[in-house]
Length: 108
Image (cartoon, rainbow, N blue to C red; front, top):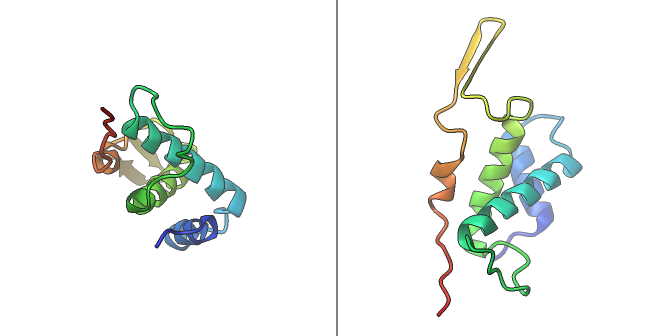
């Protein structure tokens, strides 16, 4: 069963556990994640006009990407960050670990 937008927002907010994860901000990141998934699914830009949302099987990946975008805000593109004695190293900044689960759509 497909997740509603409200359910996706609640999912990301629950995992973020941050009062700054407002509905508007999470919605923006869900939209960005959807665009990344569509770019992976339709690399030549051949997405049919009838496809307006990610497939049900990729909804969790959409939420995971949105959560990652939220958690990295302010440090986009950084491979590491050190502040006040806290050192963070990111294994990937291109989200390939999540996007590799997305299959390209091939039409004959």
